[in-house]
Length: 254
Length: 254
DNA sequence: CTTGACCCTCACCTGGCGTCATAGCCTATA
DNA sequence: TATAGGCTATGACGCCAGGTGAGGGTCAAG
Image (cartoon, rainbow over all chains, first blue to last red; front, side):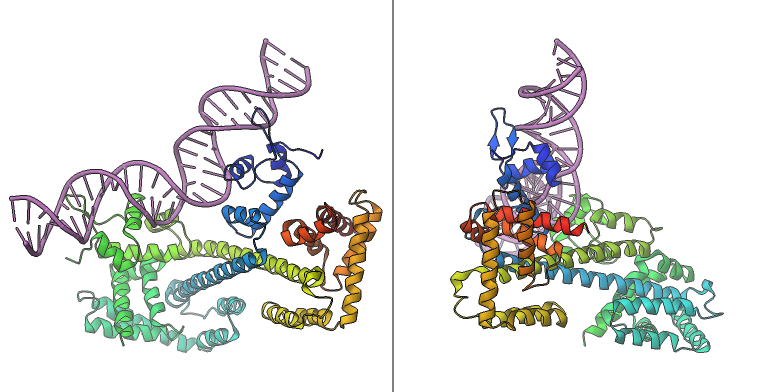
């Protein structure tokens, strides 16, 4: 009657692999209309339609078994299933969004630190306005205007002289901490300096405690940071990370 | 010197399972600092830090092997890795978005068709205003005001009489197509009726060709639609789907 | 009759563990 | 000191959606 297709033909028609068709057969998702005497699979038009449906729902992220149940039960309420599925998709999308934000924040911290602390790049001489503008534009695309405004105000409002002053403050704090490395990371003296460090960081970004802890992590995670601090004094990166973690812990208790 | 932790302790501290720690050991991602004579694992503070990093990157969706390489190679550029990873995340997010839109469109079409064509629900008697309002509210949440305005205007602006008239038109077209099923789906006569059908659909939704093709797919994907058209004449669902696909193809060529 | 394209089944591999099964270790109490 | 319990270890199978063969049968053309 109507046309019949071998596995290969159906595979090429539909774009799925032969192995996948075997698999669908195996799990009872798509059994060929005919099995010849020699066990060859022959698919008919109905099978093609079913495969279309399978691919549609697979695209949407349904599991193969869900699809099987969905297609096999004629009483199944497709609308409800789609609605449920939509919820899952939205959740996954939100998750993606928050992950992206985390990456962005991490990158922002890294770039921020680069800009603020790596002196090799002539930052003492002239403030790299171009870079700041670029950064602001990027932020603008990703976040809401408020954030941009804050970032812009913090960074570019500063004059060259102000910036140099803030930079010097940061150096002083860092060196002071380096001097205290014979003590424990949560020694009160160290913690006092860390408090200053935290305040210093907040010159540039609003930096809640969780973020501050993350910044500390970054000091030991990212080779550039690690190198920067290790150059000042070996072990400083780890020491600061631990001290910052303690600081975050202690402050969060209240 | 510093504290040591058994598997269970570290598991409880970090929130991962013992099995996971075993696994991380197995793949060389996190080997305990000490293995006692009796093969017991003992983790030290450094291991804790490393685990933190592992969890951080795992959260972000890096694979365990990627994390291992990333943490083991001190020259590894974390910023670049994060940037690459960000791209992947954004792509997945976009994919999610398009899937959600597909689901939404499917649901919209289903609801639309339900409202328009399933006569059992007394639609001839009284227009289900409550349902329309609900539908409009949902659209309102998902899309921009323009779309809502359009949807609202198309649907609820119609008087009961107008609606009945449009409904009759739809029936006429559908029956006309059913009469032409002995011809090929892309026969000019069929295509002429399909053109009317497309115009009819656009009474309710702006329905570009891709969407129209999708609607055809829906006729064979969704049991409710299939049942509706099969009841008019066996094979009509498939026939219309094919004819609609041809129509979309043909129209798009110009 | 052979060649080459196609078909079959069986079975192991991926990732990130969960879930047993089986057995050794350690400590406290009867 | 025996035993109960809680901890530890290793090893192996399972999940999901197939990928990637191995090893062997089938079919049409030359």
